[in-house]
Amino acid sequence: MDWFTASEYWLSRLVFQRALATVYLVAFLTAALQFRALIGERGMLPVPRFVARVPFRRAPSLFHLHYSDRFFASCCWAGCAVSAALLAGLDSLLPTAGAMALWLVPWALYLSVVSVGQTWYAFGWESLLLEVGFLAVFLGNDEVAPPVVVLFLLRWILFRLEFGAGLIKMRGDPCWRKLTCLYYHHETQPMPGPLSWFFHRLPGPLHRVEAAANHVTQLVVPVLLFTPQPVASAAAALMIVTQLWLVLSGNFSWLNWITIVLALSAIRFPGTPPPVAAAPLWYVCVVLAAAALVLFLSYRPVLNMVSRRQVMNRSFDPLHLVNTYGAFGSISRVRYEVVVEGTLDAVPRADAGWREYEFKGKPGDPRHWPRQFAPYHLRLDWLMWFAALSPAYAGEWFGALVERLLENDRDTLRLLRRSPFPPDRPPRYVRARLFRYRYTTWRELRETGACWERTYVREFLPPTRLT
Image (cartoon, rainbow, N blue to C red):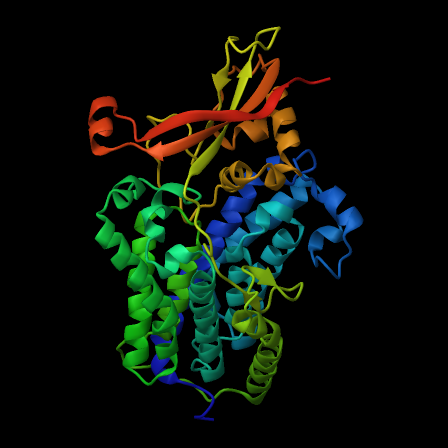
């Protein structure tokens, strides 16, 4: 069945699979280290409360059958172990059916996590990892050559990811059409990185070049993925360069990295393919059935992509098999941050001894330079950025966060960079205030050493104590 496989992509498959296993490993590690404070039994949005009101058909998950923090942790660490085994190449030592079953394990485990993760897992890259991970199940191993149809569907994901993001920008904020969005984006993006200050201080004309290059990469280059080689490889390589630029300019969890992983599958690496047997009939039938399902489910994402009312990051099926993507259809011109403080004083006056909690990734102390965390995902820090945009984004969980801080909850404090209170002396009151942040100028940076300058705007949450 020469029509079914493309043996020249054997190395592309190998690189893709090992890179995807790395992303899986990061995703499970993130879940294992953060879940107790976010969705654990005593978390801000507990899983038991969620599964009690949302049926399995809407949120398919193992945790509908049973939930405990220990069981959830076991699933996450099992996902880490299987991902590490795939990274080490265990799938190549198994028969094709065994390799497919092994790739199915992290997909099913991560689907279980995302399905009950609620707002903490409502990011596009969660669905993207599940969609890519599902196709990886059918990519085969060293026993068979890579199936053409699966390689095509991986490019189909990459096309929808990039082209959809390009369309939503052109339909959204006028600054994308005027090529001025990057005048603001590096300063107002969710979580700046260590080089974001320098990117923001690039000359205006270069920002316009960045924006124009983004449009080319997202609206023109994706079409070239479906052209003959070596054009398709060149298009994928250009996407990788663009994603590495984004990696340098900010912290976007594993979004950039899984986009790079997808692009790697479209590059035809040089090398002589090893001899393999013809694909067995059962394998051909399974792969074609999966491909037909994916193409059928692509109907609604395609309609959304061509619609004038295009939405971003939406799943149209509970298994997240085919989704729609997009980011930054609108750009904030001003950066706001919620600063959380506590005091030991008995009376929470304005001049009380308020002490600031420091987060790991989000801006706080103006002198604290941002660090590189991606592809690791700081979920609380990201949600704090949304909370600063509008209190409506924090309605479900912010009150619970304050309650945990008032209790000096160990798991919650582990999500922070530093708590200003000793473990045995929790604050009597916690408050939150909204500040406007802006990057300092070159002169201010030299004089003060601070990368941020902040100005008080208003109260976000009045002083609150445990009742």
